[in-house]
Amino acid sequence: MSDIRILDADEARERIPELALILFDCVKSGASVNFMNPFSMAEAIGFYAEIAEAVERDEIVLFAALENERTVGTCQLVPAKKPNQPHRADLAKMLVLGSHRNQGIGKNLLDAVDQEVKRRGLKLVTLDTALNTAERLYERAGYVRAGIIPNFALWPDGGYCDTVYFYKWFE
Ligand SMILES: CC(C)(COP(=O)(O)OP(=O)(O)OC[C@H]1O[C@@H](n2cnc3c(N)ncnc32)[C@H](O)[C@@H]1OP(=O)(O)O)[C@@H](O)C(=O)NCCC(=O)NCCS
Image (cartoon, rainbow, N blue to C red; front, side, top):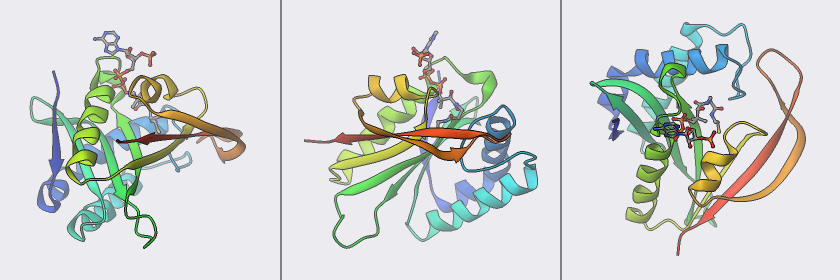
């Protein structure tokens, strides 16, 4: 059973290698999460080093799923910066280590996101995901499918990938 935690900036910095390994694993195995292959651990480390600085600036809430104190899953809640969207946040970089999937870690991360959204008094969470990847996970958690944009991104090994937009309104 994974333990879900929100990492402060120091904890995020300490866990950069573990977070980077999850991202590296996901991209290598074909997940469309902004990066292309060949993808390196150095790039993944650089990405999470920037995320840790964004956590320090209070721009990102970084969630970690821990198993025996090791990070095996992660996601981010990114409150919108725009003055006319104080009630909205994006959900981003939902990633679970390949060896730890289908055990409910993704669901546990989404439950923790819900709690934090409510604690912050946010009302709307939006996200996008590659078609035919994580849609059931989001639908089970109450996210509503807003639509599909064909050819929005590329798969990490090339070829266009359709993107599905989801939202969830919190009463
Ligand atoms: C999408 C992703 C985060 C899901 O993580 P996960 O931890 O496997 O998610 P869950 O375990 O909560 O749910 C996944 C499946 O396992 C099933 N499951 C959950 N607990 C289970 C258990 N104890 N036994 C068997 N199956 C289980 C769920 O029913 C679900 O099934 P379905 O989605 O095929 O209908 C993960 O697959 C991933 O990292 N993918 C690559 C990156 C990616 O594409 N991320 C999305 C970007 S938006």
